[in-house]
Amino acid sequence: MGIVEETRRAGYESVVDKRADRSDVILSVLGSKQMTVSEIVKELLDEGIIKYYDRNFVAPRLTELKEAGKVKVVGKRKCIMSGKMIAVWERVDQ
Image (cartoon, rainbow, N blue to C red; front, side, top):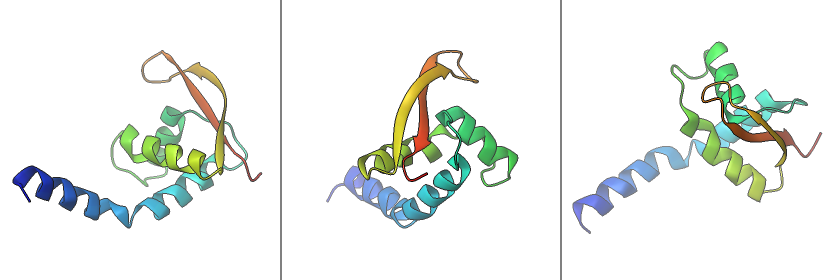
């Protein structure tokens, strides 16, 4: 295995166990609300769960949650960070 493969594997292994915890946190933040990725990240920042704006803390988990049927896209609205139109998410199990 080459260096790139080793570092990629190490990076993956460092977060693989955290995915379920992050998914639970995201589902908790969503609650019965409809939110964008940016809004979820901002709430996590405000609650002190994350230390800096990190879209990658949330976006990959939303994709996994969508594939698991736990969240769905219900529309779009302007992103609070970029001003671009982005997906709005909600829990399916409300």
